[in-house]
Image (cartoon, rainbow, N blue to C red; front, side):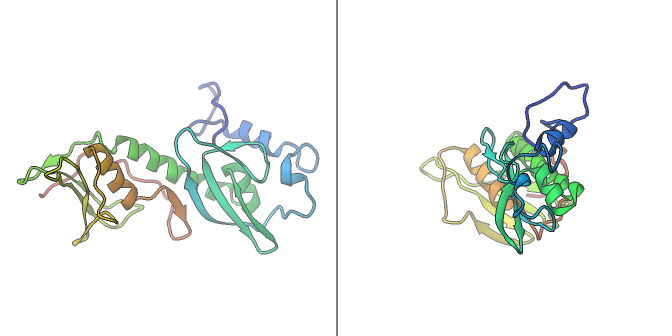
Length: 217
């Protein structure tokens, strides 16, 4: 699973886990030493389809419903024509659908998003003539749209987010206002790039936005 405990840096790993060890723990001896639903005869072991992956958040974990063992942060929702849907981790998802690379790419997409969100408020934000912070988010491989995020401050010293996307302007849904500028910036990020992957997203990996490639405003 993707959120197994860390291992020695000398071993090949993907972020916070060692792929080989995670796979062996989740699927050790299929038909003999496996765990959970891998041992149940009435549970399909192939021909599953992933419809959604969500990041439940830093410090949170759920138990994979297939192996019923691994604790996971990135939850792959798997569907099958002959069984109820299951929320599983990366390794189980890859075996269930017969596409370990695809499962890993979906999870990498969300890990990259989490990293970008962490850095978002610390990037260079410019100040408009009206005194509002703003930042341009250029197009990338995952999002063909360009965005300009503007953080207006009210007379009550609260903050919101105004988002320009390919010439279309909108406030955050519900016209929400926040106590701090940081909260407003993170709300804008989550609105533009939600913490989930679905079938309409091509998980090719997000472009690092730490470089300042922005103009205008």
